[in-house]
Length: 157
DNA sequence: GCCAACGTTGGC
DNA sequence: GCCAACGTTGGC
Image (cartoon, rainbow, N blue to C red):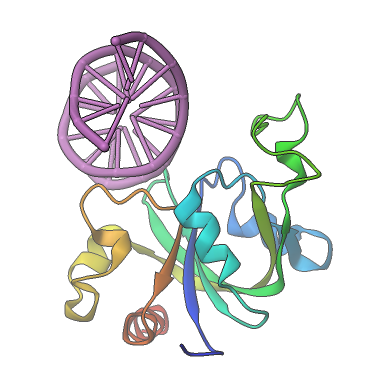
């Protein structure tokens, strides 16, 4: 397995937390809490400091990849799961045996234009991208190097 | 607001 | 271990 330079995509509803919110956060960084899906959690566990992340706006108009972030801290317990009042509270997870974890990410840059789903679907190198698969709901997903390259190229056009 | 796709839960 | 019911995601 490759040990560095991996690529990911993370989804966020901009009404809840947008890339502008990330850029405006203290130190331009945030903890990525609230993930409650095992596959997404496992992908986060595989993340390493320095990995690059596509920031995606879901439930947005248009739904789009809007910029880049970077992993700055590997997984640690997601304490929002312990808080009864939190929207993402989960009694399955306990501080002595946490089920859910999170990473920290940092703002890298925002694209000059959002790369909408319709545009992405037209790109041959992205034909098999997880994001574009019908019914895909994974909020954290791996991105292949050639997919990453194709998207960055689009962003700079 | 609709609804297809998907993950989780719980009865059996 | 099966699977129906349910809740959620997220594009449209």
